Image (cartoon, rainbow over all chains, first blue to last red; front, side, top):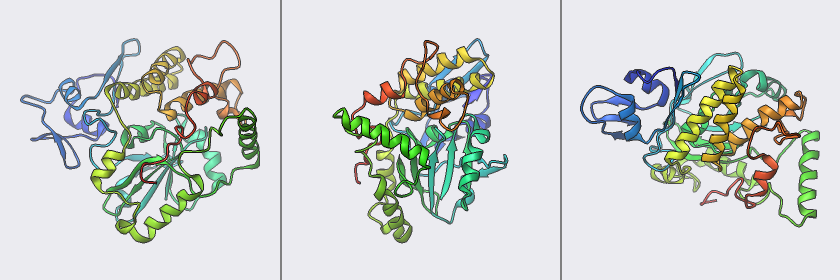
Length: 110
Length: 231
């Protein structure tokens, strides 16, 4: 996820990464990673989740990479509830398709 | 089926293709390259199966909708590349690996049989079969996002610096490579039908350490679209 500041709250972190912050820690599907005591701190969470934080000082931007603590792209088989857009810019959430089998095909014009 | 166009330039770059295909299924735009981060997509095309409960049945893997029906100009380009490779005594760079022609059959098998299909994986199998990801690859993804952000702000030097790092840290992620290369190639070619496929430099201004031709030649046939372990 991209952000202008590392002073972000749990809600922003969840929206950007798909990791919900609960009493048990950072959770995705059935997996929870303990975050220790204290208020939510993105550096702490990122370290425990194996998320790289890269700063672009010149541009005043940060990027938080995806979790790598499990050594795999997926830590759960529960599909992330991605938000994508139609050609016209309308939002579509993957969870809208529950109840049907989905074959998601990533393609590109390159 | 849901198609997702993974393209930094978004709807503007995808529109002609989607409208020409005039799909009856949802055809969505992923201009932030979230597919790589969320599912472990490492090349295009890649397919993910998700069941009715929202559980992944097969993680992102190379996949195709059927025997390829390319527009003639593209079929000619690919045939020529194939012919040259065979002439040079090389295997086709696009061959081996996942079987393009039979992939649609396994999808149909799952459509008919659901969890009873031999191709449906258990949740633990799905996780284990998903792409490896280490800290360096997490950084590569973060760098890719910063690069795209810089590109959109027309800060080209920052974009190129980030994307060189992306490619260095995650050389097996062809989606990150092909996207970056295509943006520069398309510009150099001033667009047109082939612009996004010109993923190599024609002069010293090429800002990347690799390009499609060099990087592809360095990979074993079959590693570009690796065959999934159970297929």
